[in-house]
Image 1 (cartoon, helix red, strand yellow):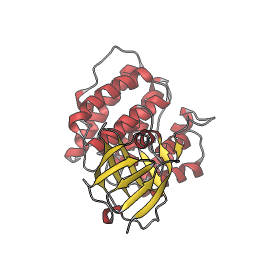
Image 2 (cartoon, rainbow, N blue to C red):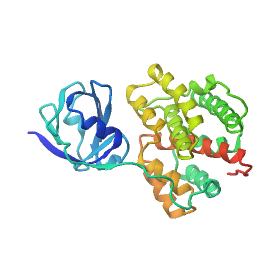
Image 3 (cartoon, helix red, strand yellow):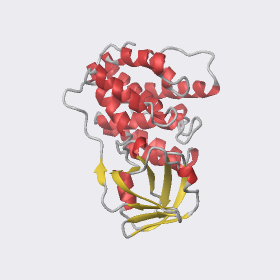
Image 4 (cartoon, rainbow, N blue to C red):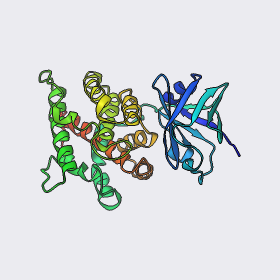
Length: 308
């Protein structure tokens, strides 16, 4: 029996993928989604609405109990033809008329001072409800510049990379020369387990924030260094997310969290953090750590006091 569905909402990168008739290959299958790659090297993530909008995501009319691992296998023959994505003999998806999703700019009234004012709320949320893994537990320390002791190898390398990146970013923001992107920060690429490692997610948050704040020169220097490392230090799927972030696009839940942090709306921020918690195992939080690192550095250069 063949499962037939249609794509309702598609991110910009996924739309480019689906608009190009081609043979494709399934490169990753998970319970709620699957990744496909065409022969041009572009990727798209096909999933139900529960995975949420994002630049690579193509959201379909699947019921919440659909398990892709029971329908599709990696490596099966697949193709896009005549407005349909055929995934082996058991799944066919209409890709002809989806609505397109794209993140909007920061909302009217957003400002950095309000973002900083929400940091105590964010730190309390993480302490009470946030993950114990990944980079979320380090957010408060990142903000305060505290030393961390007795950590494991992952946190030691990530702390060193984040600290060196923070120093480099502060120098760059202050116009103190054209320092090379630090080696310790390069080691964040591919750092950690999972489909998108924590180090990659952190750098996604960094690049999205730099673009949102219009810091294009610094963004270009970061993205050049990161994407060069990503070719051989991380997976093809994670590299695709880094490429999206370099163009200012990530999961809708992360964009909404950045917006909510800067408008002093606690209810909106609570809703955004609940949604952020659903991005991967710790991916949403790891990306938010990158956002916070950039915001804190920018605030420090502007002479604002930061506290948690």
